[in-house]
Amino acid sequence: MLTGRHVIEPADLSIEEMEEIFSLAEKIIVDPSAFTDVCHGKILATLFFEPSTRTRLSFEAAMLRLGGQTLGFAEASSSSASKGESLADTIRVVSSYADVIAMRNPKEGAALLASQFSAVPIINAGDGGHHHPTQTLTDLLTIRACKGGFSGLTIGLCGDLKFGRTVHSLCKAMSRYPDNKFVLISPQELSIPEYITKDVFEKAGISFTTEERLENVIGDLDILYMTRVQQERFFNEQDYIRLKDSYILDKEKMKRAKNNMIVLHPLPRVNEISPEVDADPRAAYFKQVKYGMYARMALIAKLTGVL
Image 1 (spheres, rainbow, N blue to C red):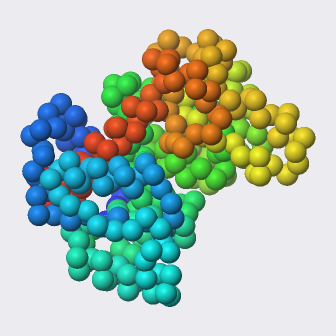
Image 2 (tube, rainbow, N blue to C red):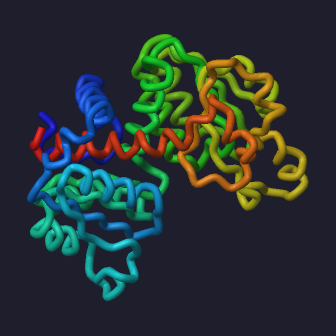
């Protein structure tokens, strides 16, 4: 039973519970009109202490499409946090008004702290570099829709693998399924943290390789998960200039890829995927946005106990 539960990190959900969420999401996708009133009378609070476009609007769209209502704020300056109110007090107050809370906060561990003071379920919508569980649900639902399942896949993760919380969460999630392989494509400065390779991959017996250039391995991939590489992450400009084009996906690189490979990206993108790739049928990142709304609809329905 997911009713009343907090979702702070992807590991809070078992494989069976994620299956429940995905099955419900797929039913909503097939017949959204059957679910337009299931959350009538329910309220979602979106507490965003840092800016967001997709995640906040996706949560709000999800609740509105289920027939519920939303309230909240889009930045810390428009809340009593700007007056010095503690997070604990904010959560105590808001959980008196709402049936479920989606919260983004730049401080790692903020969602876990919030869950200790909330009378209603807390959904972590991102806490610093830690976790973003509904992005993981989004990624997995997209993979399931496009690839038919989660096993026997070669997954390329490209770009900033050091600081990307979506990458870390996806590694953990896909490592729970058999026969997957990972190709880690990044400059050395932005390589994936050791706790992922040691505590996740090696612990689960997962095969992984590292590579600096995307074009060298793109032909081996079933999934390519792109992220931004930012100039300020490099220790010197010469290394950035030497490598920056390696992490821009364009038509030329796509020619080397399998016909059934899919390209994912948590968005926003800057220049790491050329707009010319958008028309390629393998580009799934805007589909991914819509799947994110359906995943959140299913999660809200489960946590509030309406389905």
